[in-house]
Image (cartoon, rainbow, N blue to C red; front, side):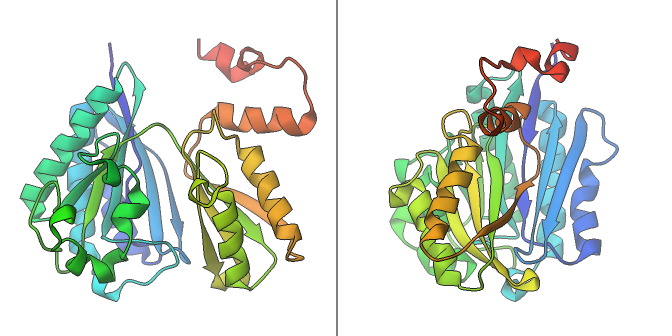
Length: 298
């Protein structure tokens, strides 16, 4: 009985193709590990990798990739629109097949402990692996970003779970954890006013009184001359993508701003898109059993 775990590490490099290739290389050509996707963004200056595998081979591949990123990325010279605190910014493990959340949490702790020891890297455990309630939310851990982290982890309440009590000089700090599948969903707006995008993001996200399973921030896409509401949908089964999309349209209307497109970063479960298609098409009594791929994979 094969155990399959997914990992979606985020590395703080979205512009230098040579560095990105070095970071991704450990996921290629290994037994028990499969690189599914990687998506880089120059504005965010970030690459999001999606990889699956059996727990032990995946663990070693992740540790090797972390080492490559720590060697390649100097956070002192890093700028980008996406909040970040480390060269290896976040490493989430997601149970996929024959793996419990408890096992995913244990795997995340093993990786965190070994990475801290191997690379002298301060690491926080987050989401389901968090050791303190205030560390469940990644945004709270990351607040202050790389520039403010040296002072932050000197405070007793922000002592890292593993590694030294000071930031890695060039690689910063990393968060490692376990979570349910999330969908990275971005909506683009035809405005160059950052405050408009930021206010829409505030109104859409749960912390601002918006959708329960939605995290959102405003992003300035300078290269494209537009703004973006960048979201993590943390439970697409309870807060559907179409709800976030429609709420952004409603909020944008008050500023005379239009939605001009959207994008998915990385991979997502088929059900998340089917649910949205069913809503917009008004299909009645539809089930996933009617999706051809579902029947083929049985």
